Amino acid sequence: MPRVAVTGGSGKLGRAVVRELLDHGWDVVNLDRDPPAEPLCPFVRVDLTDYGQTVGALTAVDDRYDRVDAVAHLAAIPAPGLVPNTAVFGNNITSTHHVFSAARLAGIRNLVWASSETVLGLPFDTPPPYLPVDEEYPARPESNYSLAKHLEEQAAAQFCRWDPEMKMVGLRFSNVMEVSDYARFPSFDADPKLRRWNLWSYIDARDGAQAVRKGLEYRTPGMEVFVIASPDTVMSTPSAELAAAEFPDVEVRTELGRHDTLMSIAKARRLLGYAPTHSWRDHVQGLSRLPADTSG
Image (cartoon, rainbow, N blue to C red):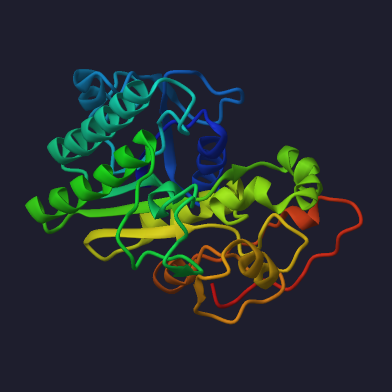
């Protein structure tokens, strides 16, 4: 049974990832500063800004495990503005470099990590080059948080150049949500500008966890990045109307279904087999589930 170390396994996305991987036959260990609310697998308290601790956690821990086969690196300060700029940048870039370096030292060649939708240009004060946005245009970091995520992607490409057998998958997650978050979604309809900053996008944590598993199962060596979002938006307003009202001069490159995401997941569908199944509309009374977008 392959063993995967999930960094940040006690967090919102991490909890869903741990459960998803356990349900699909992985031997999971949770590496985090904080213990999980619900212990589902072995937990080791680790400060990833300490390289020695990171190396130790990715090699062996007495009476817990004697090897690690893969890493899902999710641990980070999760958004800009939570701490001062240099603190978020320093924590995230340092911990990610430590994980990448320790994995290489340990001979681990299967690594998935949480990049971010923010590298696409959020909060889109400068409009995107086209809609739906995708992985094809150069990164446009607009915060220290996003800058760190962009540099992590650049570092991963070099780690894979140093070791051509290495596989590193960066998942540009949209705003991660749990079922408990969905009650407030209908309020977004009052002012579309409230969620304009990320093109009215989100990702259910359970679908995010599926993307992590699919990333670990992906076999092609090298570095790839994927946008990971829900197939639908957080809005009741049709996506084409939102785009026309808020980004009137931006080219729309695909025909949009009623609530289709404006963050393309076509690449993740095609290469990873990503198939999201959860929508906020399933959890809000009075809304019926619409057919899932198939184009991305």
